[in-house]
Length: 118
Length: 110
Image (cartoon, rainbow over all chains, first blue to last red; front, side, top):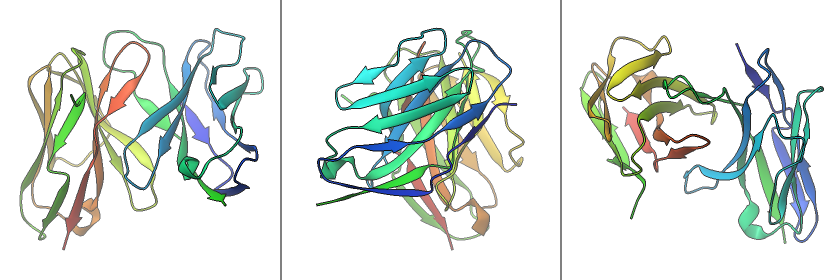
């Protein structure tokens, strides 16, 4: 079974600075997807970024980028120019390849609470 | 137009009662899920349905019974509610790449 580990329960960053959230995972599959979700106090789960394991290039979405190290099974999230609105719980998640069968559940890490200080 | 909607958003009830949470998606997806987020914010899969067929049942107590009348709807019925059932329940709908979550239902059992 796949597992996802986020070793930083809490992190803090100064506004406009850069912060990196860590995530490691364990799997025997060679093809899979990795995600970072953001959960603000409103509790809505918001997709931040997606990485396909077969792609060597790291995904980037505006101020958010990942460092995907497949051999090391590491998937960290870098937030540049941090803003007050970035304060939230961040969850790393693993998903098996799409099969159209409905078995592609998300396996989540325990989350990292990010505080942004003004 | 909301992609994945859940009702109600908040549910407060007493132990022993039976309650239902409804979920609807307008994304045309075949697969829908229920996740539970506990008091420590840990999210875990409960069920998945593909085109009205149960695919995943992650050792959830029999008191929880999902029902999918059609592929756009996945409801969750909970019998004989217990204090430990207090949590946030998320419905999700899955496309090829991503899962889209509903706003969550905060269930409080007193």
